Length: 560
Image (cartoon, rainbow, N blue to C red; front, side):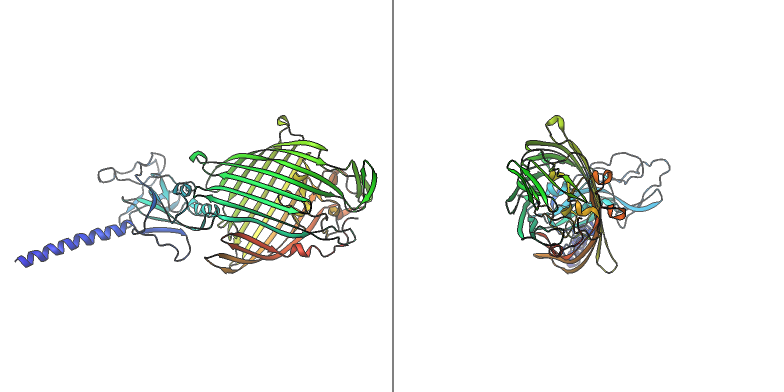
């Protein structure tokens, strides 16, 4: 009898332990997962949690169906109050979830019991949560597109190599816990690296001696795990140098506001003319290949930004610069069949630039450097503030939109469009420059212009007369072929090719076209193309293109 009693007691204890273990497993069961590399994460009840946000408050009353929440003390949940005409949620005791039927759709909705952040050994939990828009205690729809966009937004910070979001069962029926699992990456990154050659070329295609240029832009994007960015950049060329230092705090005073600032210094030159320039100086006039404008810039900007949604941000910046320029007294150059004076687009001697700039960015890319899907749209408006001492009255408006999609065979197609306009008298470095749109010419680096050439002019239009303009536009298509994907120092290698059409013009090109051009040649457009390789590494992304070297092939039929 004693042995039988002991056996029954042992079986009872074993049964209790088994039930408790099963209950614990069920409470940690993963309901749904977004993103993450295969085998990189395993979310379960035994996984250690970091930064748990718990104690879900009652769901606020509001229109539409709600999910019942068990009151304190473990009593049975009371039936929810439904809006008129709404269908009540159907509880599924087996899966511990609510099936919501409303507005012609069927989906799963939970009450968010908490948010767990895992894998962040360096990044503070509050920094991760700053990009998670979901509130504890509020309903969470498992089909909400913001769950995927939140993952993309976290990847876009550059703090993480991989991000996985998953829902697991909460402690009450109808509750769920959002688990954010991150894989951190090196946050000391090379934002940009420039190295190339520049030259002058006559309209007949004869190139002049080459000059080298280079630059480096480096940042710590997650200082001590706080999300603060500090960085600097330098660019050098013959008789030119540019310096930058910047700071950005995405949680200024632990709020959801971003504070950012930048200081700059440029000792720069710019080149005017397409050959046979007549320059007037105090000692008389002289014929030169081009006229040179020397100038220095010193100043900075500061501003604040705020998220308007998971994928939308708005930033407002104020900029103040002092400009000191040394210009020829006058200069003239050929424009078509006529000779016209050169506008250096700067005030001789000392001047000031004071502007207010607003930027709106919508970003749904899945990766910041080698995206495979999503969109990025940026809109910028800048106005010069004469009441604040600006000597350059102008208004600038531009839009840049890109779309990425993965083709059925795994390659990536990018569609890109840009349009910009300047109304008024903007300084030289704020005007649109042909090298910023043609891949065959060096673009400006930190505001420095290294090249003296005009557009290659494949179509034989009057764009050969235009180096800078008030209006610009570009349409471009890029095709990428992934050739390597890794998880260590090199994350990805893609081969790419691109082609596009761009245009650049000034007001006078519409009201007073260059003499000697007619018909289709009055449309200032040109062709651009590139091919090369893009490499994403733990230190940043790098693009190596051949177009800069192809641009040294002499072009005949440029400016008249």
